[in-house]
Structures are given as structure tokens and as C-alpha cells.
Length: 334
Image (cartoon, rainbow, N blue to C red; front, side, top):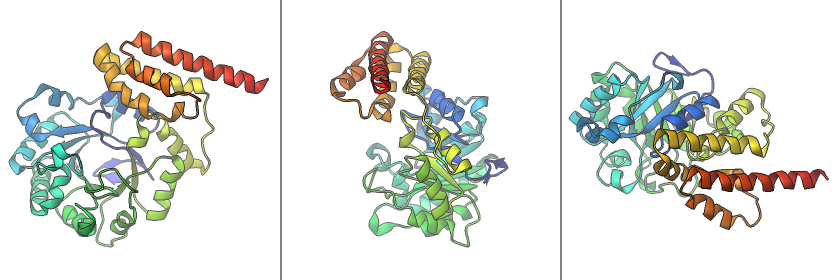
């Protein structure tokens, strides 16, 4: 699969852009475990052209994470064009336009998935951004605004005609938010449309290596994007790539191996921010990780873990969990 001149190989697996998740340290972690392409957090075009420091910081990319896309959202043609040029100056490999974010503060203002209610403006923004920059421009969107307006098959052709280099589709409508099941049938219909000649990337409910392989085989997509399933589980890319290469699940590592990855994430988060903000940021990963599932009477430990305010407190709790798991393993051996 190619995006412009960027060759991602056969059946690439990509890290989806997620606000407050895909910061540079997490992107590098996922890249380490095999993600073929990574995306930044959402960048507000309006905030970027106003030179808001927090937004400008999101443009920082590292050479070792390439290929990397900066994802941009907004609702005004001139603003998005100017912001896209600023993104290009940060030297990513791709600029991705977000027409799929469903959260109210974005969509209700007409940006993100809100663009699904104003297709002419969406196409104008896309067309003008493509003309304004030299980098490949891609789009990420949803099936439509709601079940009565599942317009993605027609929309995909229109976006392609604007000159985009690839299209990523989340298999839900905006009205669904993240509820229900992702519907990949329309993603497959877009891919199998003989008029489509750009890569089509599917997204939604890819929570295992087996599901990832199934989406390639069943729907014929060019790439699969993993989002929420990577939170607290960056090694899912390693599992997916192994299964795609061999047809067999990757043998599991030890509990300590996985826990060490989470500890690395804690350290990196604290190093990038500071202790207080770093721990607040990493709580989402600790809450979402499947590593602690099945531990009996874990609720109180989980609460304590998510309330920890220092690295020392947090690592002390993680060490107790580790000792418990080690004792369980020893008891099983005996």
C-alpha cells in the first residue's frame, strides 16, 4: 500500500489518531512494536494559526517514528489552508484531515464529524488543502452523520476527486459515537467500488490480531487502523503483525514483560510532562490495559492505582500486583 510515494508494504497496520493518547512518546512506543504508520493527536487549525503553544507542541515529530501524519481539523477553508501550510513546515510525511471526530465540542461547531452535515464545505476544504501543500493529503471520516445519511460510498468518490492520497473510514456514524458495533460492510463497499483507486483504510473495533487479519481478508481493505485497543496495550501491533505474517497467534510474554512496558510508559509520560501531569495523562492507559483482567478482588487496587499521585506511589502498587502474580505462578507450578 502506498500513500503518495510512501510505501507501507502489504497489509499495513496503523495507529489511529486519538486526542490525549497519541502523543509522541506513545507513537514511538507503538512504532517500536510494529505500527506501520502513526498519527498525531488532533490539531485545531484555528488554534494553530493563532499560535497557541499547546497546539504548536503537537506538531513535533521524531525521525524514528516515520512515516507520521499530522491530523488537522477545522471548519473554515482559509484557516485550514493556512494551518496545513504550518503543518507542512513541521515536516511530517502526511497531512490528514479529520472529518470524523464525533465529540460535541468539535462536531457541534461544524468541524470533525460535523462536516458530514456540510459536504460542499468538506470538499472545498479538502480541495484547497490539497492544492496548498506538497505533501500527500489524506482524510479520515465516518459512514455518515446518522443511519439515515450513510453517505460514505458516494462521499469517498467525491473526496478522491479532490485529490486525496488515501481515505480512512471509521465504521460508525457520528450519531453512534463509539457505541454499538462498527459496520465494515460499507467500508468494504467503498474498497470494492471500481471507481476507487486510492488506498482505503478501515477502522473500528479492531481489538485483536485475529480481528485485524479478518478485516483484511473479508473486506479487502488496503490497511487496518487500530485505535482504542492500543490504549494500555501498545504491543497489539506486535501481535497483529505476527499473526498477519504467520497465521498464528504470537505466544504470550510473561506478566512482568507486559508490566515493564506500562512502567516505561509511565516514565516517558512523566519525563515529557512532569510528575503530576504525567501521571494524570497515563491513567487512561492504566485503566484500559487488559493486563489486570482476571485478578481477583482487584477493584480496590485499581482505585488506588488510579489515585496515585507520585511515581513512587504508583510503582509501589504495581510492585505489589507483580508480587501477587509471581506468587500465583509459583503456586500453580507447585
